[in-house]
Image (cartoon, rainbow, N blue to C red; front, side):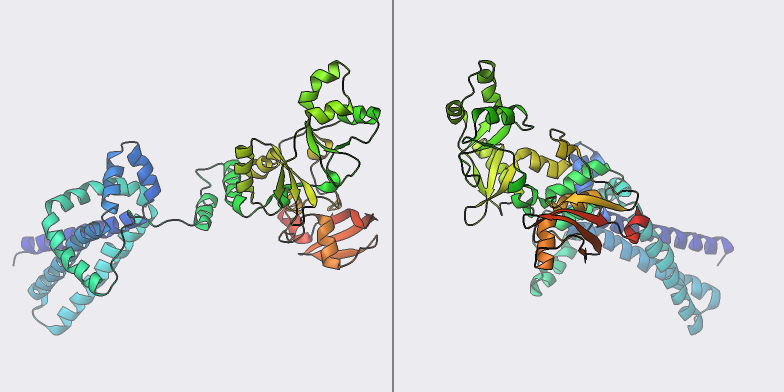
Length: 427
């Protein structure tokens, strides 16, 4: 055989390896492509994305056309290597064995591993390109692919492994969606990712987690003198105030200060007028999920609800703004307390009120205090110590040192939280 024909055979071998690599890469590209991104592009009338979505919706035929031609090319390459070996070395067994090892190595490196790695790293971009030739091959050889898949489906049915039609994609769980959001740094800004992650937590967070505790609620008592009522209304930082009548444990209504403005100009703010203007209080159970509470607020056209426990005792107050802040972070400065942000001092410590919500502490100070039990720092300390702590007592909870600064009325009024060395170094 002449040198030219031998060179042509080597050239044909290289071409077969390249074609085999392209089919291997196409298989990886189509299986690893982001189907949701492809559907989004297809909705924008992107031709390549539309073809890719159609191929992924018939995975059996897609794999059939790829594997058919990939195996044909690999078989042809193996036969060509045998021909070349016989031409060069004759029918010696050692030569045929060495040729088999050589073609196996070449197929693994140049037609399998390397193309698949490239396809996996650039799947989304390449899927828009390889969908054109794959669609053409599938249309041309549709009957062949159908005939091959006929036996494949029969075997799957015999083994009771017949796949269900799920439109080419499996449903994603909440945790999988959360992972996708957290890993989308280059596509979604940090603030938007935080909102999306918080949105996933609405089903697990209850109104008790975000409510204002009963001791921190600002209200008015109709049994007080009218001058006291005028002063409290005039100095209130809120637009809605719970109304009591002698018993601070019982709320008889909610006063919307905007409805009181006209009477204030007429100097006609009396106890009877407050009773006339106030609306019926709206109560919700403490274990209501935030997602459900948003729906309840919308259905009942309410913005404020009083939170009660299983015995009907009032625990606190929750507003629509509290739920929104849980989603997007603190934004209101309507009260001095809401404007105050917890920050570590120069001595790596911070003094906090015992009624501070544990979720706020974890969020603002990057702590890991447990939130599956009590909702406030005072409740956490009382549960942990099983007693009313004395001033100066120090404990460590979830790796966070806490010192009791002041106790009052059987509760921890203020405490000092220390930042650990590890957290200080991380900051």
